[in-house]
Length: 226
Image (cartoon, rainbow, N blue to C red):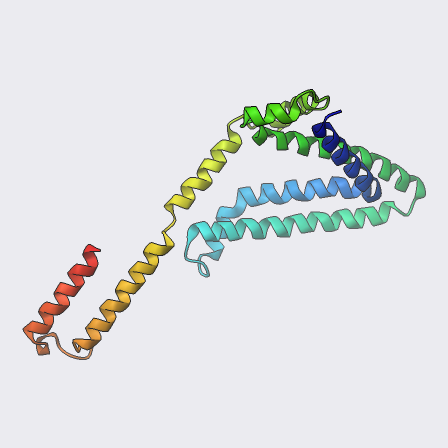
């Protein structure tokens, strides 16, 4: 058994033991809380952003806040329902024992699915992936599981790469911090020079000397060019 197999067996064992203690109800509702929270957040984050527009000017930030808020609210609501159901069912010892056994099985399946999804990005580096999975007993089974998980989630091999590219593009489109700092410095410089020239909203424009007006115009043009 290779190092890769040892890690896989360890993850599966920990998940099995942990899920046996948690039981079926907690495992099912744990998955449901993630799924429901995610689906609601995906579907209604735009509507949430509209409601937040009065507090947040930036639409992308408003959508992000709305997404996180919806996810947390609905996932916690489902988790609370799961807690109440578990309390109700655990009044019976028979149901409690069955609950734990099925929970262990669900924990194994969940761990296998997570391991399968973890190896997806590893497969983007064929040489590295080949080295760590060489002579592995579990890798072929995880690869088959990966195919099934991607089929159920309706994602292709380029799904993760496309989303990573979207994040990179979003980062490139965001204003550069250094550029914003430079613009702020230029604004402060303009403000200071304007004060020195005696520019004031309360004074009529014709009170300024032609020389002062020329200096102000030159300063504004220099800042605009930068």
